[in-house]
Image (tube, rainbow, N blue to C red):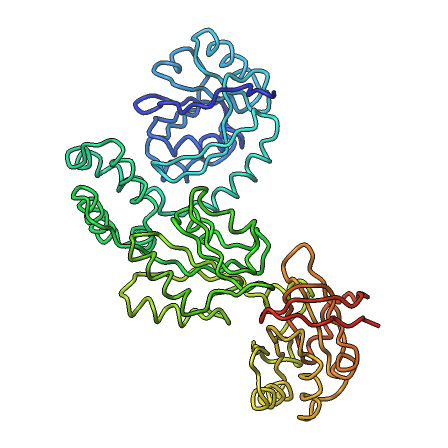
Length: 482
């Protein structure tokens, strides 16, 4: 088993000094990090080669001294950094070791007693990432990923919880009940929403209401998040969606949402599949509405996880109407809609100067003659059509579009499984797609129609006829691509 060569700790520096030896760029970089603490930061060098004045304006405790390093500089020191080579560096190394103080020598890990981690600062919350001096660039890349995942208001949330500590101890005697209160407070979407908009007073009021409910064992109100799961790839899930999934008591998800995305939710969250699948009856929309309302009324934190974006062909309006009628609080987390992912897969600019002035998303599911006539009018006006759920009926739609006056050579592109590892795509036109219906592999598809479609990068693939499940739960044979 590989073992850590360092022991991660958080080191107290308040009321002490952090000594930085050197007057160059490395010393400046260490000073920029050290002034984030409450310590007095002292930079010592015979010559100062870089400008420390911006940092001094930021932190009055930064003291830059142009002098020879000596033993008295180590009085009340907590940590010592040596940033530059030279005579002062050698003196500092020797005196620091003799004084028994922790020493860090830039780019010399074998001389270091400690390493400076890459730090994510959400004061009072901090996250440190260390590579034991082996790969500092990699540590910074990991930090960037964590920075993106942690909301900026996380420190305010920690401060809010800390400010309630004594009140909580007085009102809630049971340690287990206190833990449950803090878990609910820190995962509360209402509190998060208030803090993210700068409403600290509102967040405090919500926290006190929650505390009163726990102290008096009253039923807490639930909350529903309508969350867009994106087209299927886990890394196309938004950061907000990931955070919300971690706070869920129940995840109500569609069939098209991959299991890997569902599993990104809290480990002990209940999971309820309500999507359509071949060979069994699905939940009706009315039953889904009733389910999410009931769960919220039970005080649950509910995530309604929908493929793509919940507001684009996701029947969100019906669920919103049901929650409004039941006075359920909810929020909407957008997702990457399938058409956007499909355009990216095909490198297709759906709006293109002098070719396509706009794009229209439509669904072929339930489309009638009036809808197809409207699509043809839009396409002739220079817009790109992005048609959802049109794979199985594209032959008929293409013939009708030609009948409405579109050129038979109008480009048509199909992307199946957009945004996923098994994404496939092909380019055709209205005439050829009518005759051959090149539907590629199994999976949900987006069909693009319009002159801009030809500007994408397409890969034509040959597939054998097979059974493909469409979104209505029936099956139709794919056609072979010639």
